[in-house]
Length: 138
Image (cartoon, rainbow, N blue to C red; front, side):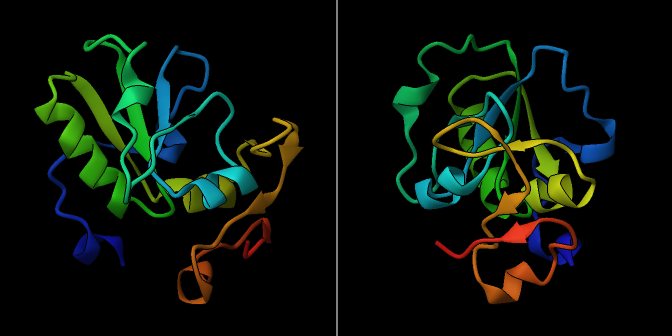
């Protein structure tokens, strides 16, 4: 499914290969209502339709950055923008937060930062790719 959707214009990293303790900066390229349901702990919301460049002010251009969205399409586009802005170590999370959830990796609730298994499926069509977690359409 993803191979036809993505341009593969950015380095991709697999959920399975992620080291959650290596100091990587995670950027969430979904919309804020999706981020509020759940996200990767410590992730910075940057959005997609209204990309929040101001959220990047504290990030050095050479820091390791992984951008994610639901499946990898929006995050690939935001990663391309980051590279054009001069960021040098940027990767797209292949399979996105859906694959993260499917692998039972930890998520936190947007408002409380407490662990959760809730995940925003974007819509019913895309939600079919979520095999683990509680789908929340908010």
